[in-house]
Length: 232
Length: 241
Image 1 (cartoon, rainbow over the protein chains, first blue to last red):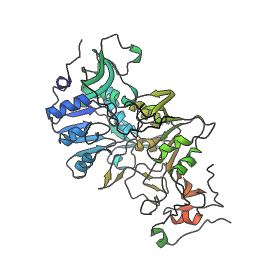
Image 2: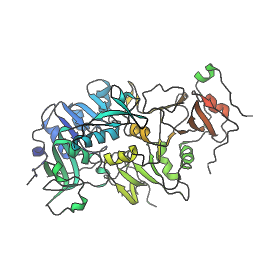
Image 3: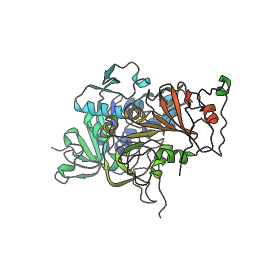
Image 4: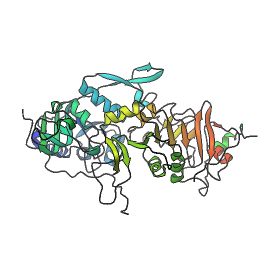
C-alpha cells in the first residue's frame, strides 16, 4: 500500500469545478497551504468550501476568494477578510455561517456514519430557523445534519506512507474530523516518513481515513496575530 | 430604605447616556472584577477582547485552567519576543504558550468539553444583552457579519456565563436592553454581567443591580440601563483591590 503522491499538483487531481471541499485549519494555523496554492494555479472554480475560517486577504482561502474560485463558504467565523466581507455583502458569495462546535461535530458525524444529531447550539437564533426542535431533559435542541465532501484536504506535521498522521500544537483543530469526512482525503505534511517511524500510540488520524499524502514543498506558516511580551 | 421602584421617564431612557469617563472602570477594571468570580479548580473559557485580560488577574491561591476552543487546555501567557510559534495560537488567533500540564485536542473534543458542561465558566463580550438573559454578539445585518465562531455553542451549554462589556455603546446607547434588537447568539443564557458601571445578575423580572463601580451612582446606572433594573436595598461599591 502506497498513498504517496509527488506533490500538490498531483494530489489535487480529480478536484473539478463545483465540487465540495473540506479544508482543515483554524485561522491560518494548520491550513493546507500547498494544496491551496495548487488550486489557485489550476483555477478550479465554483467551489463550495467547508472551513472554519476564510483566510486573510492574501493568504489561505483568501487566495481562492481573490480569484473568485469559491461560490459558497460554510464557516463559523470570517472576520479577518475584507474581500470576503465585500463578496458576501454584495451577494457574489453564498455564505452559510454555523456555530463552530456544530461545524466540528457535523464533520465528525459525516466521517463516523452518523447522519444527524441534536445540539442546543443555535436554538432560538437564525441558525435554528426551519430546523427540527426536540426537547431532551427539558431543554430545546435543534437537528443538525452531517457534512461530507468530495475531497477533504488536511495539513499535518508528520505522516507516513500509509497515511497515519500526527499534528502539532493547535494546528490540529479541524483537521482530524475533516480527514474522516472526505470521500477522498488528501494530507499534506511537513515531514513524510516511512511506516514504523511514527509511534502507533501517538497517531492522531489513523491512515484508513487518508487516500493521498505528500510532503509540502514549503511552509510559510504565517502568523495572523503576533502577540508577544518583552523578554524580562 | 432602598431605591426600588425608582423609575425614570421614558424620554430620559431614549436620551444617550453621557458617561463620566473619570469614574467608570476601564477594561482592566472590568477584567479585575470578573477575576474575583474565579474559583479554585475551575476550567474557564475566555472570549476575545476584555475577557482575555482576566487571565492577568487570577486571585492568589486560586488555580484555574484556561481553555481556548480551537483546542488547548492550560493556555499560558503570550510568548516572549522571538519565541512565538505559528502552531500555537488561541481562539483569537494570537500566539500563546502552553502551561506545564497543558493538553491539546481537536475541535470536536473541544466542543465536547463545552457542550458536555465540563467547563465551569464562560466569559464573553456582547453587543447587546436583554433583561431575560438573551445575548447578541455576532452580526449587525447589512453592516458587519463576522460569524458566531464558538459563541453559540458556548452560550447554549455553559452553566455559568458572565458577559464582560461596556454598559453603553459608542453613541451612548444602553447595551442592557428590554429586548435585543440584533440577531441573537443565544436565549435565556446570560447569568451575570460586569460592565464599566456595574455588576448585575439576570433574575426573574430583569437585571438585578449587585454592585456599583467606584464613585458611580445608582441613578447613573439606571439612566444607562434600558432594560428593567431591579434595585434592592443599598448597592455596595465594587472592591477592586
